[in-house]
Image (cartoon, rainbow over all chains, first blue to last red; front, side, top):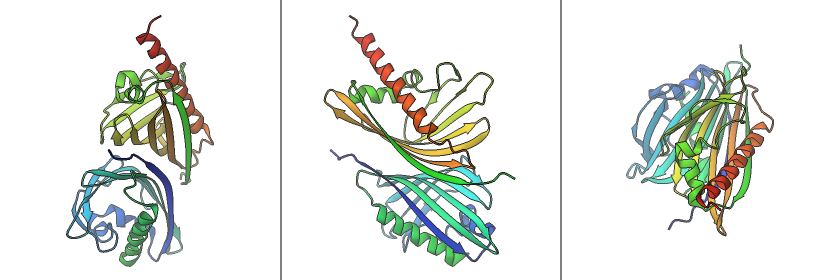
Length: 149
Length: 160
């Protein structure tokens, strides 16, 4: 029997991007833009549905190119265009629960640039992931957004 | 224009119930059972609780004081382990305004013949609708309701 556990944590990351908030917001809202960054490192997206609106739900299958074993089920909860995105997602690996996250993306104009604050409140399930690993993944994705906007 | 802001907060509540984990879990998983303890104060007007208790299923309930704002709860079940764990996210609305979104983890563990419940809530309060501890207080009141319900159900099952 699996030993059940739930580890709670919060990851907070900040960035300044040399692009207006509308461009940064589009990194989430526009499917073509999102496909450029929405997995860490060299991982790839094997399948992705899009429904970017409050109450919209999406499924993404992803992972290493030869083993897309992860599935993320997302629900968009609060969207303020150019300003804020709040969403939840649960991740599984071959059907085994890994985590559930509540993620807040705040965008603030800073002259012609954008200050982004990402706060991910997370519960890690049954020891199937670590906070450090998740922070590394999110850092990698924000770096990619910086490269695309 | 509305001033936009977010504030993040976390609280944890622990309770011990005399009932076994399977009975505590059943108080969450069955709609008619959950409706007996999950809601606002007794004098609030309430709407029917709807519950689709499965991963990916939704739940909603609303209520409020007569003539006052309607408090609406809308949840999505994220992870369920029978008798052991329930993870959900929920939105709270005051009338039509979304005031917060939360990630709630309920853990149940056998404790003697009873159950130790640990509830952790990670929240983001939106646009200044920060309730300064009222959420934790209200959640504690729900667990008081749950304890009373479990005790009364025990009496129902074992009449003197």
